[in-house]
Length: 245
Image (cartoon, rainbow, N blue to C red; front, top):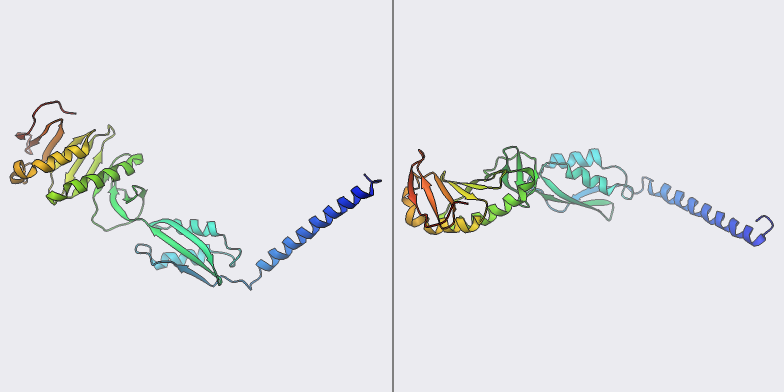
């Protein structure tokens, strides 16, 4: 190698080029860290409804570090996403010298097992809420399934002007609904929508006058249902044929 001038020149050029790149990198890094590129503002694309201004300002003052070029966008995003009611955050640099933050909040759909909330995407989150919300009961990995059926059954119930105040999914995947008038409906493990549609269709003709008396209705029959008094006596039977499922 040492007696090969061409190879020596090539090695020298490579070392010179590497040194130049390192020098340029150092110079750019030094310039970017100068106080001449301050981060002057953090702008929200829209005003949040649930997240307070105080909590947002705390993140800005305590978590955002660096100037316009050196601020860690991912770290900033994660800091905002730690706030209650925040579902997703988008952060981007905006000239001149500011950050634009877009906050997507959770929209509460129901309470989850009395200890958390479920949003309209069927996701469980933790936050304080004074809203009047239905109760969902189920295993932690079934929240999306419960939220989906809630939407379907709520639409079916609209003609009766009844709301679901509790929707439960047991560990054996059996469904139970409690309505706003206190009536409990057993839907079983299959054809939940169809059973609810059948209940809505016959309710005005068979149960409307007994709504204040009948508190439990078993819809787990293939072609009908049974209604019971609080004491357990069967007061209305619409079973035609088939077994309970």
